[in-house]
Length: 252
Image 1 (cartoon, one colour):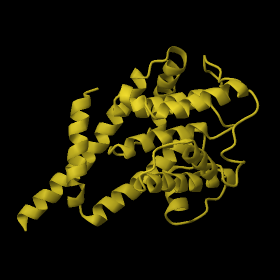
Image 2: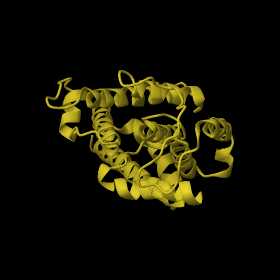
Image 3: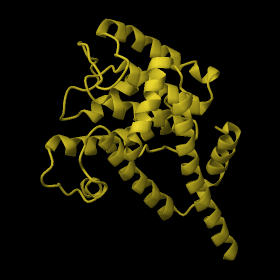
Image 4: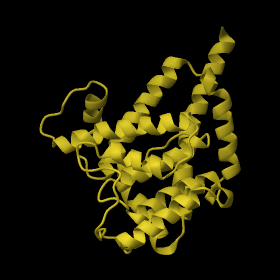
């Protein structure tokens, strides 16, 4: 990870994004939201295609042959991402209430959201086992306390990686932990001036392996590298739009 270069690109993105035409950035960010929702739900088993996700979110058209739960997962994810952006716009630091709210939005019409599990859970194919409820409650309190100072110990990409990896290791909810963790990862990125990222469903195995490395060995390095790579791609797209906008303004 070339962290100084990522910071340079982040700063250039923040300084120049106002130059991008409003229609251009609005259409790009809308396309990203749909893609992000599709991949984040698909990683968890949702069977809607990218085009079906677009029909549900943008055209508000129901898709035949799909379970009602899958439609709620898609709609709820979009709403949760909007909530994340709204909280960041208001300058709120990530905390337990916000994470519970995110989970509650994700789980609307599916199950009771924002409520910690009270039973043991096991993850198929994983070497680690999430903590039992009593231990999970204690570790969750530590997690939220650590959010306040981890940024002093880690760089901002590592902070986003740790926030996601530690949360999903705790597995505090009966369902929706993966979607919640990817949203709070983006919360940390966006709150610190970076662009949100989307982990492609085709990269699911590599993604799960990096999380397993953290859960078993406590090493966020591989996951942080994955996030850094995705972040650089996003920043490069924005910087290309800025460069194009600058070129157009010079021609006028």
